[in-house]
View (cartoon, protein in one colour):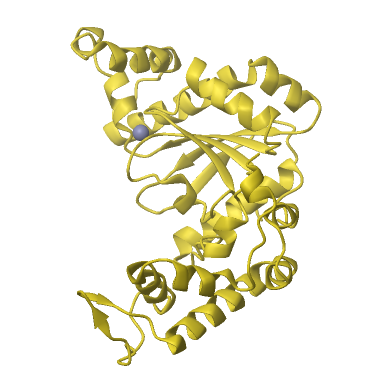
Length: 308
Ligand SMILES: [Zn+2]
């Protein structure tokens, strides 16, 4: 723990202090962001801003307006935290005031489903991205879910679940596979961060899975570390049924890999103990790039409604 942060008092409405202390381009950037409408269009520009050395100076009015925006957004998200910052709480006090998004595996799954619904429905809130919410993460992280996902650039985990800073502990590797590196990260999330759920998420159009479906001779032409990834996926595809439609076959392969990696994960002693004690749930998930919808695969006996 950093003692400098531990005892640091936040001045009331830190944004004002931040805006005045840092160089104007930082302030202009923040102000510009806060002045954007949800649809991405910009509000009417404040013509009172002046320029200095090619950079806009921020006026007192602009600072005041930015502060009010920050206060309003934080008050909506976490009123107790907003009040604490207003009174000059320390970083440690602020960390304690972070409200858990979920307290049980069932809650955690529900939050992921609801967040994904906002994402595919076009009503994403992109929560927890404000300056004060960022500062509230300094002393500790309390992600409610661990997600083992693919590195594919079209599958950004936080965006797909519409979650913010500190909400998800994300482990990404091509093919979302379990190996010592990814398992070590997941163990950390489960044992030390007290997450309530582990999601193994594959996706439509996964290049790693396509590569693992190629003949062995073709896979051997890949560099050694790519072959390491393919070797971890291949066992999952050993029993893939003959499906003539290529798209359906690839989907089947992705789902088989999700299930296989999930089972590998459940064999991990740390994960297995956490499941047994009821602290976590492990689920599979398939992300449809085209629709934005995540389908979840739960084990028999996990009594969680498919609806929210
Ligand atoms: Zn992929």
